[in-house]
Amino acid sequence: MSTKTTSKSKTAAKQTKASPKQESYLEDEDLDLADQVLDDGYMDVMEDKTVVIFAVGGTIAMKARADGSRVPASSGEDLCAAVPGLKDLCNIEVVNFSNVQSSAVTPDMMLELSKKIQKTLERPEVSGVVVTHGTDTLEETAYFLSISLSDKFQQTAFKPIVLTGAMRGADAVGADGPANILASVRIACHDFNDDVARVMVCLNDQIHSAARVEKTHSANCATFQSPGWGPIGYVDEDMVYFRSGILSEDAGLNFPTPRKLTAKVALVKAVSGDKGEMVDYVVKSGYDGVVIEGFGRGNIPFPMMPSVRRAVKAGLTVVIATRTPAGRVLDCYGYPGSVTDTLEAGCIMAGETTAAKARLLLMYILSQKDAQLMKESEPERFRAYLQECFDLVLSRRLFG
Ligand code: ASP
Image 1 (cartoon, rainbow, N blue to C red):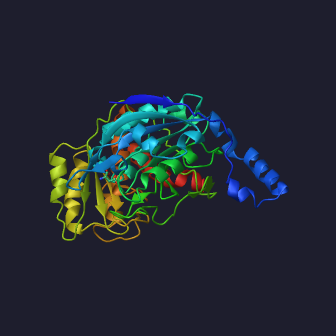
Image 2: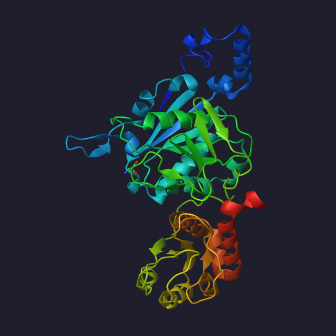
Image 3: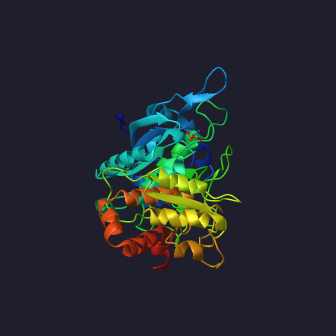
């Protein structure tokens, strides 16, 4: 499924921020200062670093056919070749993992990608990884990578995984892919302290954490946002800035990575007047779990409750998420169909995790043998464990 090429940086020449024209306006002491800043900054050591780019596909690698419709066209090497100055930043390696639209990316592919990235990051010379990916499901892959970092990987030195993509095709006027790749590679060779979200998304020079980021616009280049939170940092020219204090909350959950994703988990969107038929269908179809995307605080129409109870009784794990882009699911109402009601029925709250991400987390956990055993022998303990998992994703490091 993948091919790999390596291209070593040809130049060890130090980059300076000042062009020859700008330099003529600087006094000697200004130049000394500029040199000193560069000597102290991360740019100086980037030449020794290797960043591995995993090309997965998406619009970033697409070109228009005669009828104007875009299809996959560019390899990872093509993507890199379109970024001026990329190879002068650090050593670049390319892994052509796949070349597909992101609606074709499956959780199994995410797991395979996660394993390959973890192996790559074990190499001491690799400072970070960039993943080029379709934007449609980019937030799901980013989230999956963030929850699937193995214990072993957690103990290694901090190495970022940066996902990026493009809203405009590789051959479009104003293609955003090259700038997004350049910014992402800058992050991947940045010297981090241990306090920054490990899996990040960078488009449009904004940096978002995998746990919070969402695609919010079907076409605009500023589509990736973290509703209710905001970006964790940004890239400005050749510098990378992070805001402190809110950075490390999604740095992995320390679950052992399952060998395979064996669990089937559905996502059902609650709608006004819902009577729960879709939930009943999920139960009949042999699923192990279901995420119900409710309204507001997670409330669902009360006529769904018999179906929810049937699902729990049938052994499905039922998680309640919210359709609002920001905010937490909470049992602050006491009427039928409220989260107080669904909790009493045996459901779990997704916290601030979106429904699509909650489905991946549930699939991931239910695919672990130990979790399955706990679910069968100690259902209440399993429920508490699962609730803690959802709470951890956004809150653990942030609030102690
Ligand atoms: N349809 C594309 C995809 O997700 C959208 C994009 O990459 O921007 O693959």
